[in-house]
Length: 261
Image (cartoon, rainbow, N blue to C red; front, side, top):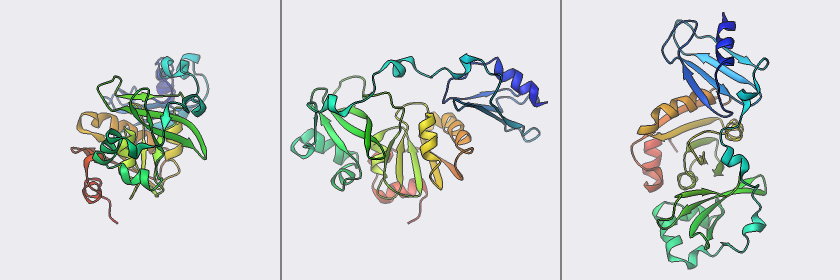
């Protein structure tokens, strides 16, 4: 029976790092079949109560099945911090707009206590959140302080998430500022985009619990991400946000996330 699912999946284009939902060809459930492309394999599972078929496909897939999600990211050069050494400033406290942004978005403490490496790109007028892999700087993402577009700018092509904090519970959010804001009581992990990369899944697999925290208009995406993470993480929960995490006090954020001390 599962061969019918495999045959169906082989005809579909699913970019690496993407989860799609389909009508199940076995039980005919509407939008119940979740299919995720992890790069070297594709996993599928039907969530219909009368079906629950799942499996892994590692062979017999076309080359198109493993295309990357973004040619723009692929074409961007690898990040080298030395390239930006004359653009990035460490002296944030000397710039009023930088201090205002960090305080307004509850990132000031994390920067002061060295939980987050945050700099200022004076050429582009952006607050820059540095992305590390171990002790190595591999990428950065910048938030425009003025009206410059794009609002968020990814400097490299690492596909690494931004991670801030050192706790057993990870809070998965979209932007680096929100990840920084929760880092005093949870590990903030920012996807830095609309999709969860393979590298992000790999990093999240190290945590005991992951809270997928997205806005109301992204509730479907939150469900898809949670379903994908269930393969890699012991405990995954969804928090649909009606308030902006980075604008909340620590106690307010804990209450919204339903996290106890």
